[in-house]
Each structure stands twice: as C-alpha cells, then as structure tokens.
Image 1 (tube, one colour):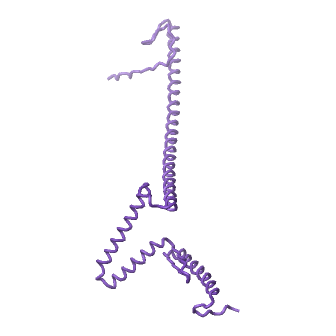
Image 2 (cartoon, one colour; image 1 turned 120 degrees about the vertical axis):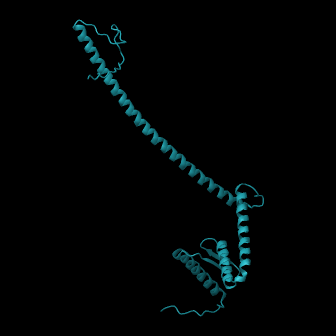
Image 3 (tube, one colour; image 1 turned 60 degrees about the vertical axis):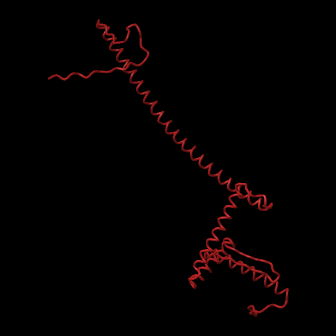
Length: 224
C-alpha cells in the first residue's frame, strides 16, 4: 500500500515534529544542492528551527548571495519607482566603499599589519592563506626555472651539434692539406730526379715541414 497523504498542519507531538523537521530539512538541503549543480544556479537557503538553531546552504557564498538579492530587489524597486534612482546609486556607492575597505583590510593583514585584534582562528586562517599564496609563487618560480633550464639545454645541444660539424670540416680541411703536401713532396722528388732543384717559396729544402701548407694558385691571363 502506498503511503497516505499527510495533512499540512502543525504537528502537535514534539518528537514527531522534530523527526519530520530533520527528514524534511535534509531533503530540502539535498534538493537545493542538486538544483545548484544540475542547473548552474546560485542557491542560498536559510532555515531556523523552532528552537532557533540555524541551518544554511549556499552554492557560492551566503554573503554574496544576500548582496545580490538586495541589489536585485533594489533594481526591481527602481524599475517600479524611477524616483528612487539616486537613492539606489547612493547605496551602490556605499556597498562599493564597504567592499573596498574590506579589501584594504585584508591586504593590510596579509602584509602583517593590524593583526593585533585577531583571534587564534583568524590568525590560523591568515596563515593558511599566506602558505597557499607562497606555495603558488614557488610553483610558478619552479616552472619558470624549469622552462629556462630546458631552453638552455636545447641551445647547448644545438651548439654542440654545430661544434661537431665544425670539427668535421676542420678535419676534412686538414686531410686536404695533407694530400696537397704529399703531392708537393712527390713533385719535388721528381724534380730532383730530373736534375733540377725546386724549392717552394718560403720553404727550406733541408727542413721537412710538419704542418699543412696553404697554396694559392694564380689564374692564367687571358690572351687576345
């Protein structure tokens, strides 16, 4: 059998009233949370029990929701009554001044100023905020240093490859100089065998050069 309908009226029995309040309160908070998540809505819920105990739920921040509610209500009243526009903007300016003062106070507290009136819990929250900020700064610094190290390693690899290529070119030029020197020695031997002595300019016949010789050949002149 299905559950019968409950009459919507005050429950006289205090125990049943408390049990019903606990069940309905949990269901209402659950529905408010689901509404905020599924529909991307900004939800604020405030419940006071018969004993005066507070239960609340806010999808973002209860303070911001209440401020938004007051602003929307004033805007609606402004549309209904255009004569209250000046009063509306005065309230907006007052709210902005209040928010600015709150931000300045938070900034001074983060800088370690005007913290004498804070309690232990407030100081612990401030310390946690500073630690989170410091952790974020360190992570950003480590990321930048890592990127710079990777860039330097990349440039070092490129320079190393260029040095290897230059070393290969130097060895190739050295081998070509050795081959030219051998050909020159062979020519000198042939000249000596034919009875003529050929001594290159700047080279002593008694000495055997141990370094490569750089030759520069002149171009033949064109004849008419």
